[in-house]
View 1: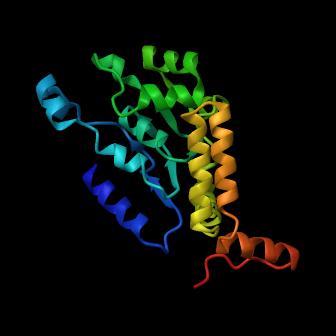
View 2 (view 1 turned 60 degrees about the horizontal axis):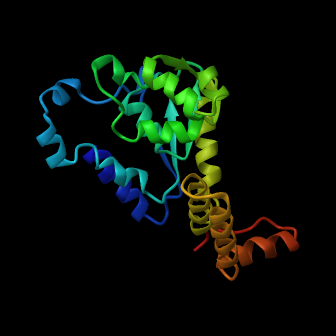
Length: 225
């Protein structure tokens, strides 16, 4: 966790980085926490260390995050994917929150983010049974953004990341903030926030360049200089 957080913070501080891609390997994106480490804990130690709270820093990053799933994303691995903005999966991806099977519950935001993403009844089904779902079902319920053939996975992931990174960093972050607001506010509050943000972008270099380029029928030059 600390290694991921350190690397991610460095990328966010680098103004030349426009998107962060998080991936595992063909076997697993991440299979979750070390059960041996967890088994040695008690309530006092978990509370004292605020165990897993470090991941809140990853979720709070303003840099757009893409999770690439090729294989298993289980438990904490699934929760880590849920912290990302876009989830791209191969047809071999498998998702699950199997904590119930070891007498536990999701502890890195899974009960909250999964419910907001796929709805109460689907989240209940996955969390209370601990069952795994495949990429096809994950796409159907809205857990993933796209399912991509494994042979094309790296190429398409790079295209998605590049397309995001080519847009103005400040505008991308404003768009992310508005979408995230939708999860944490009423419709009326969210619309007001969106409108204030929309008004605020007028006069920014990206807005001026983007609209000027459109009117001049040329490609905008966003991230130059």
